[in-house]
Image (cartoon, rainbow, N blue to C red; front, side):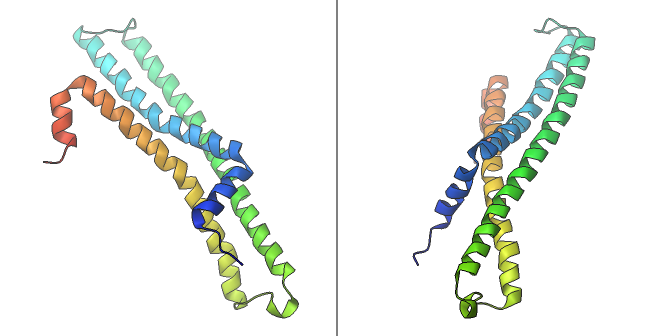
Length: 169
């Protein structure tokens, strides 16, 4: 039997429930970028205190905006956590079901080519590794999005200082 490359079977797992993967990626990506708004609001707050504000709010409005942002981040994290758990159980359940189906299709004497303990470990650990790989693939993308947006924000503040701190010496 021809072995499927790892990346192909991971893509097949994602294609099983693509909406779950995409909603997970969107929620975690939003969570990663939303933290940058706290910095922008803090900058506006201190600009308001110094009289150099470019926002049509006073300090009370900015504090309320921070509270609303914090509450929305909590809701976002809870929703993202629920979607992540659902995605993890769906993907690992799919993989375990397919593994069990393959074991049960084999003749009785050859159903388990390994010891029972090793087979149980494969069902548990291999499925976990696959779900972990799928889970982290979109979270790494979200972290990359965070880094790009943060870099662009730093460039707007001071190009020279940003390049000095980012580029290798």
